[in-house]
Length: 291
Image 1: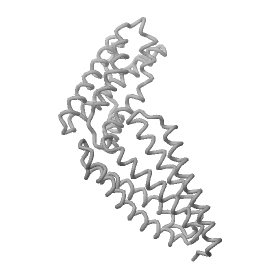
Image 2 (image 1 turned 90 degrees about the vertical axis):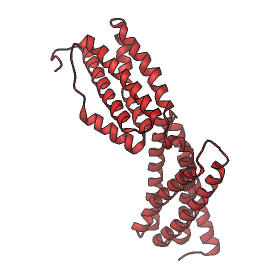
Image 3 (image 1 turned 90 degrees about the horizontal axis):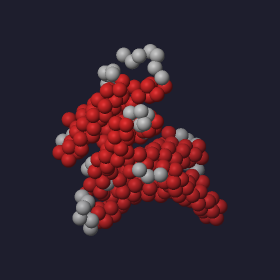
Image 4 (image 1 turned 60 degrees about the vertical axis):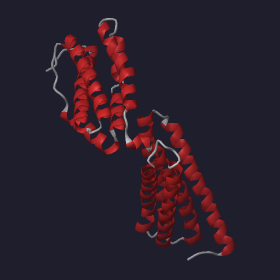
């Protein structure tokens, strides 16, 4: 138990100590679960650092803390679903506040400065060294996701004004999307086969899968609603959510700027959709296409 009457700085130190013991258990558990020797070695190394940090802070707090089981469970599940690198970088980012604490008390507790150096340099380098398919083939996922968002939002926008029948638009979108996903997968296979560091089959699989999943999400509103224009607005909203979620993942996992990449992808997708919608207006007014 922590003392009731403690200063704000002491409170922060207890919180940092709690974070260190939680991180130790998270890294240790993931190390035990992974089958890759390279990743296991890295995770065990970081876990040892976290345990050392915990013991170092404990010398000042004189208190032993229990790990937060809910937090540990959350990060273990997150790592399983979205990959070690994303989960662990998110963990490190969440603990960034601890760096300010160590800097503030560095003069009083010089040994804690070593923790700052470890947290800022050693651990991030180790995480960046981890081998993970999700990140190795992220370029293939980006290719499938980008193409599906740009091509299908554009096609659906054009179909919407030209045809104005949600069900037909959804079916056309599905046919267009699945055909395009096969084409994109084949193109990525041919491209990746010339890059010796990649497994061409896996690269094609990631591209096609990302494309197909995006296609189903984008056409869903047209299959569930009879109003084509409401469906289109919903689809554009889904596209924005997909772009935001994917770019948040990439921003955390690969240390990219979220805002820049999000604005770029959203701008391209919505821009193409707007142009395609105008083309649909033109086609309907000049050729009289409609259902």
